[in-house]
Image (cartoon, rainbow, N blue to C red; front, side):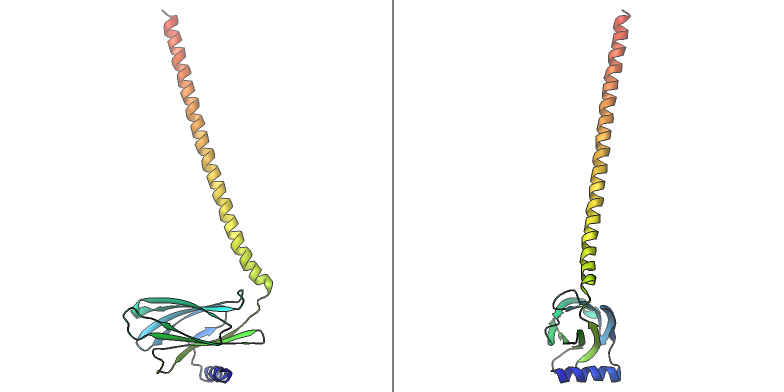
Length: 192
């Protein structure tokens, strides 16, 4: 398996056959496969243990969307993307190798196990981001939800205060009207 993977990486390096370059933890590209255009987004999550890679795929001509997360502990995995018209399926093959703190991967599409695979991705990422990066991501999620909660509480308190003030104003107007009516009555009764 390792020799196949190294051979594929060497082929990618020499021929430059990849269409997607994985330079960051996320990449997106559009790949022509036979008569279809396959929009592919690859997301590497180095904060998960083991590191995982999610492929979000949309086959434009067939109006198909599909997603799958591959664990880096699986060195080779193939998934079938089924089509609603029961036409030829798409197969996504993902190869991953962990070596010296780096995750190297290659991915390719084929429309049949008997056809050759169209390799479109090759790249590597460091597996260990440092705890502070993953904690920052987790803290960012917590901070965002805390900010939204505080904003909602302030909005509810403001609305409650507004409603209370309007209610109080209405009561004062009713009392004033009652007093004005009583004074007018006393004036009328007092003149008689």
